[in-house]
Amino acid sequence: MGLASQEAINHFKALMDQVDEPLKRTFKSIVFLYLQNVHQGYVVETLERFLKAREGNVNKAHKMLVDSLQWRLQNGIDDILAKPIIPANFYRGVRDSQLIGVSGYTREGLPVFAIGVGLSTFDKASIHYYVQSHIQINEYRDRVILPAATKKNGRYIGKCVKVLDMSGLKLSALNQIKLLTTISTIDDLNYPEKTITYYIVNVPFVFSACWKVVKPLLQERTKLKVRVLQGSGRDELLKIMDYPSLPHFCQRESSGSSGSGSSGHSDGGCYSLDHPFHQELYNYMKQQSGRCEPIEPAKQGSVHVDVALGKPEEAELCKTLESELKKLRNQKSLSGSLQNMKISD
Image: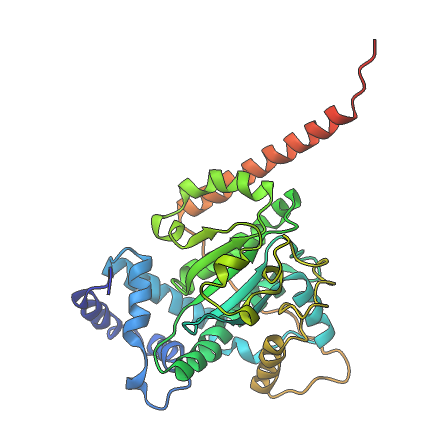
């Protein structure tokens, strides 16, 4: 059980029994959704995740979970899958600029999330739509994908693996630090320990330089989850999954995804709204909302979600990364100037 001893679990359970009824209801909706009887849910596994996120400290883990439940109540997270981003053409723009999808499953049955870090532009909608979309994918993962994987494999599956494609990463990524920090904070505070390993592939120089600065600032448990692979990572990933489950940017040894965010789907990549994962997700949300695709564009704004500030060290990490990116940008600018300089007699 690792950091989560049986004594810690029992203490944690006792504390959760004392929370207000609305929090108990939303806690049950997180843990027991799609199960016939409440007592057949995976309470212990959920408490273990929050304990691990707080280094086994029961009081800190309890506060973290209660804060997360409050966040869910205040922002209507339990109902967020009933609020699809419409119309579909607008949602397609979100999908084409926030590259994420499920490419398959590992041999152990864990879903494989592919993320196009380098080619995501986040330029087709406001920050609120991207945050809404990210939370909806998280919720769909936890409520539909992981329970289905658990049922299929006959054992509890509560985590996934993520393959992050860094090809196309530019210094302009500095402009997205606020959005990426917001998404990271949401995951850290409300969806802890849902990813077992982060595989990073197609790494350019920009990432390598930043990683040297950022790595020492990360918590040890986080660093242990990150694996930077050679090239497209194909050979290493084939040790844990079959070829059809590889993200499209790993299925060939040459580095990089094909095309840009809006044009890289011709090879059947899982980013596209036309991919079965996104079609099933979007249809599920429409069913939950009780609406069919509107004939005319509906006037529906994004869901605004409040995000609590992260820990001081997380803010310091972002400042360090921003500073390093600025240095790299200045170096690149200076390098370009020197290359264009002509020396006269």
